Amino acid sequence: MQVDLSSNSERTPLIQDISSNYNGALNNPAGIPGKVPHTNDEDSTTFTTNDGESFDNVPRTKRQLGLFSAIFLIFNRVIGTGIYATPSVILRTSGSVGVALLMWLLGALIAAMGTTVFIELGTGLPRSGGEKNYLEFIYRRPEFLVTCTYSIYAVITGSAAANSVVFGEYVIHALAKEPTWLNTRFVAFLCLTFILLLHGSLLKWGLRLQNSLAMFKLLILSAIALCGILSLAGVAGFAVKEDYEAPNNFQWNKMWEGSRGDANAFVTGLYNVIWSFVGYSTANYALSEVRDPVRTIKRAAPMAMSAVTLVYIFVNIAYFAVVSKNDILSSKRIVAALFFRNLFGEGTERALSVFIAFSTLGNLLSGQFSQGRVVQELGREGLLPFSGFFASNKPFGAPLAGLFTQYVVSVAFVILPPPGDAYLFMISLSSYCAALINTLVSFGLLLLYTSYLRAYAWKPPFRAPKLVVVLFAISNLFLVIVPLIPPASGSRTYEHLPYWSHVLVAFSVSMVGIGYWFFWVKWLPRKKGYKLAREWVLQDDGVSRCVYRKIPS
Image (cartoon, rainbow, N blue to C red; front, side, top):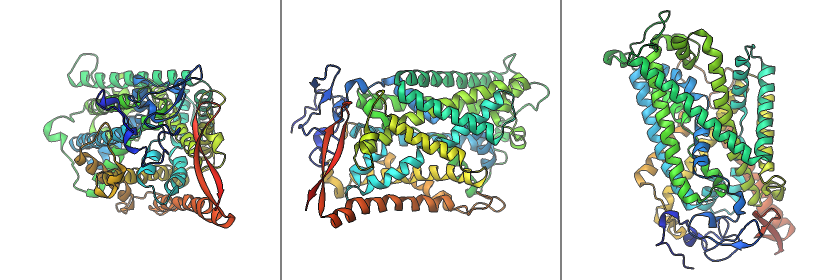
């Protein structure tokens, strides 16, 4: 098979290198060398080979995401509520303004490395599904094991329970009501239902709202940063009100005052910073719906994460320019509320609640949009029960079944766990599962560079520097190991559970996937006397998927 790479290597996917090695599982489902058919509006078949769209057999009309939609998808997913509250947590763990800002810069560096790594993976395997595709490509034996195991993790990590409850709390605040368990959960339920109906039946309108909220979020955070810088510069009208302590956080001796040498505290703070940047791989989950995916991901991811980094750094500077260190550490209010109070007065707190609610809604829309595609890709793989149902785009041209799966899980996590340990446990479990997956992906990418996996012929259009991949793998390992470190004396992760509870469950969850794999792939065929043979079929909605035939052994 020959594919011309000379015309535009930047836009050429990895089809020519892996189609024979990967048995057509991730590409070339039609079995046509070098090309994959796409059905257009007239149901005729056309072929492309140089833009990444040929990698996955989906209707051209399904590719709704252009460059700006991909940028906003990532931007929305990364920035949720953290930037409004996390800076105070980072300051407490670091002890000084200077070290806190260094932590944010270090987190931005780690996020840049992660972005680079996922650009390589996305250009090499430009198909929806994200980590699912990369794990399947790297860890091929035992066959189907990694897919069965990942499917359990995908459902857990895709839960939107935490942010939907945060959305509910700030909506109640904005309405000047007292938040309770019932009213916040009810608003969270309405929010999740709205997202399901919007993304599941009105795809274009969902993208328009998603993009609009991202732009709104960018404008608000840019305004916060500008106001803080104007206050720092002493511009009239932006001075801290006389009723509140004037900050001196940027005087050199004050900037480093109180810096802590406690390694555990530093690690805890850095852990929070790293999680504030998580989401740079979001577009990788929906590449089958991106136009010109190879070229787009190479531009969208760096642009989105550059915007996120600038916003984070300048908003932190704005907070420290307006709110004193003592005020941040002693107050129980989030730092954004203190910022608005110091500049504009107490009456602006409701406006802040509106801003945070909209920011959270954008984050939820982006997260559920991408996670619904992951479930759809698991359905296309043919290993889930009712795979045809999950793989379909019927009836509205969107993965409604995948979105509904994430909706059910999220609603269950919102309603069933009581406040306290159980709810925090769910959040920690989701985060830790994501860390485990990314650790396997990053170290797996390193394996692709070795002679051990040279036969896989990994030659993507974009290559991350090896040092970047090594450092990113180490940072992921860091996220896996840190929760195993006992908390400092006097502090507790949970009130009643051991601090390592979510770690134990995260590893135990894999046993469910392994058990399903053993039953469906090994035990049942051996007992019934057949072998599984995989083939690709084209559904009525134009989306291809795997089916498994039982061949008598």
